Length: 87
Length: 263
Image (cartoon, rainbow over all chains, first blue to last red; front, side, top):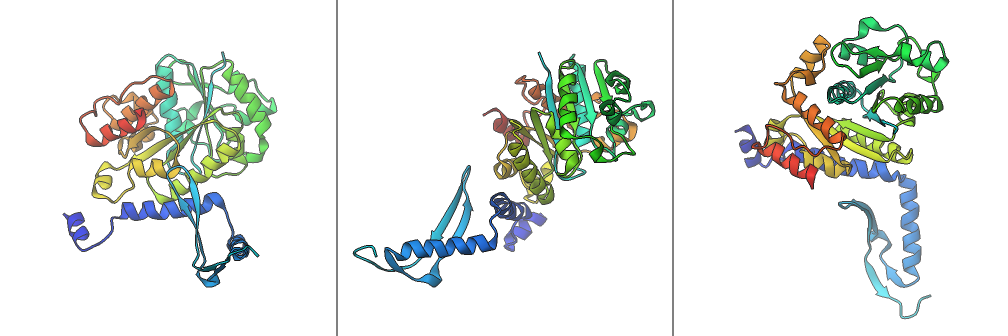
């Protein structure tokens, strides 16, 4: 009864909250990448991409995502213009 | 043929390692296997009280390793079950009084005599943990459905993999089916997908566990206890028997669990 009422009020079930939090925590525990390393990685990605295209440096995002039995690094960046010839 | 050496570990304390060792050991011995249990929690021994054998301790695992006694002298026979004995931890020594090499040697010499060597690992991931896993070919990681226990279990699984312990399976202890149903506890599926190791079994939360440790009689002796039945099922699966969980077939929760384990 309490559960139904809570769901009705839009309260998330604590079991699901726990699962989501653990997904995030375990992923970071496993890779053990420091914020400094992440920043360096970001800069390197920018450096490589800049040889081929003009990108919005401020828009770059690098995230780790946990798949079912793999881990993925996902990076999103806005492209302004692609160079015709690599510089 | 050498017996199996199995370490029961968890990272976090108080999740049920010692209870698991006591109940799996007792069941395997009841099923006519020869079993020795080693308490490696030096300084904080507990397997003796859980088994109800605390009054019989003369020598301990450190005495064997230091050569103060022969290993037969430190083995305490169980009161009820034949083929079952236990080597207690030292209570007034340091974890550093033994090292992984010595444990490895002890485990392999015991595995030559027994079908099963069950190692009760201390909490934590320091020296005591390293000693406990050194001689093991199989690891059972115990967790409860709580975030702290799961996080620690994940760390331990990583360390076991790094230490080349090949067979790792999971035991989920103290699952409260009502809370899972209500959505206020992570489900078996949630936990398995987080930790991604195969499941050996699930023990429902039960007051019987407290009662049995109060008495110093392992739970599996009580035929009416559901938690005891869960441990019996795990022992059978550990032994390679493909027995389905008994008596709970109609229950949705156990049905799901069964499917997870047999696929």
